[in-house]
Amino acid sequence: MNTVLAGHGLVKKYGSTTALSGVDVEVGERDSLAIMGPSGSGKSTLLHTLAGIVRPDGGQVLLRGERIDKLGENRLSALRRKRFGFVFQFGQLLPELPAEENVALPLMLEGMPRGQAVERARRWFAPLGLDGLERRRPGQLSGGQAQRVAIARALAVEPDVVFADEPTGALDQTTSTEVIRLLTSVTREQGAALVMVTHDADVAAHCDRVLQVRDGRISNHTQYTVA
Image (cartoon, rainbow, N blue to C red; front, side, top):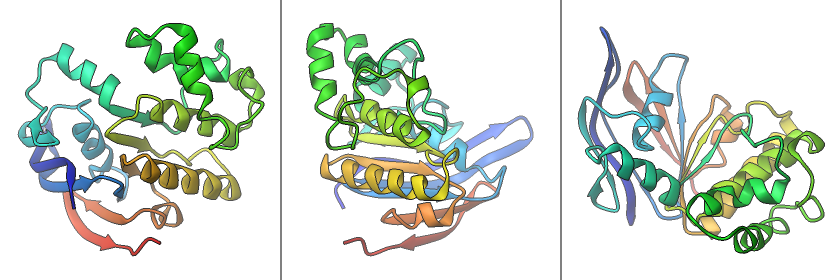
């Protein structure tokens, strides 16, 4: 596996509570990793630590061999914008912007002219089954459509890694299956790694690998064969 992102010996404490206790994890190009575990197990802390949102108290986070957990906040913020994509449970789209501008927003924040950014954003609509919805605002989209727009936004910057935090948690089962199939297939096609937190075993089974986290440690690691 050509490792894109790695965490070595990750430790994170909140007061007297140890959220991560020496966790090791790696994810490679086109690799999809689901992180599961009960509430309070440390799964979200692990995702946030790998994504540079939370700094570990011990251990290292490396992106393509470069240590990122010791970067200054400005450099870390820039790295998250340019090399990471994020998909959240409720999409977090801006309600006042049409879908195409929501997708283009990360590009515009990096200085790309609006017209060029929107043109690049539109390229994602057909592959994600969103043709004709470019000018609709989030309130005019179904839950599944809104999540697909969020996936397009995450991929627009051509990231090394996409982080997804319960991306299907607000969807019905049929829509959830459609969205997770799109998320895993499109990230794989783009050569990006996917790291996802989910409570749903059916969703996790669409990933190449599943980590079970309990009490801040990895309790089980399952490898799937994905066609």
